Image (cartoon, rainbow over all chains, first blue to last red; front, side, top):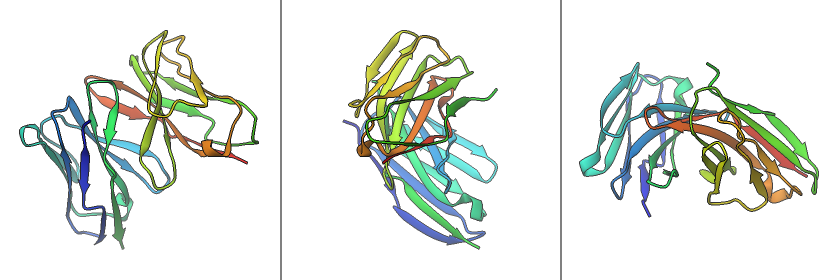
Length: 108
Length: 111
């Protein structure tokens, strides 16, 4: 089956720093999503991005489907950005295949 | 537009009790899902539905049942609760255009 790998597994930054999170996937996928799970456990849909680039405020994402990777950029980090960032790919059988996540801690 | 609504948010069950976790979406999505997330782990698919009247098992269906009588509602039934079912449960719906939307979760403890 499809494998999804995220890096780095952990990231600790000072407030105001920029970061790049990476998601590699092993086969062609229908779609890719980035989620943020905040410290209270809520799962927030950040981007639905099978290919190309999207931006939403301080966050942007790029997926290069032909090379099987996606990048999530966070600029000018804030403490509220802390949490776990998941990449998930949509396989052909109605199931999301999840990466293990990147745990991000933003220090004030 | 409320998205995906789950109730209750928290629940404590005794071993052997039963309960139903409710999930409702108002986005007219055909696809709906139930996931569980154990502490420090990713999400595992319990059951999914591709439309009213159609359900299928996911990765970890044992101990659970679902029904889908309407497009909006997708309840998850736990029969004979066991400590191994202590987890956070997420309901989600999806569409081809907008991807997946998750509910806020139900934190269940079985004691």
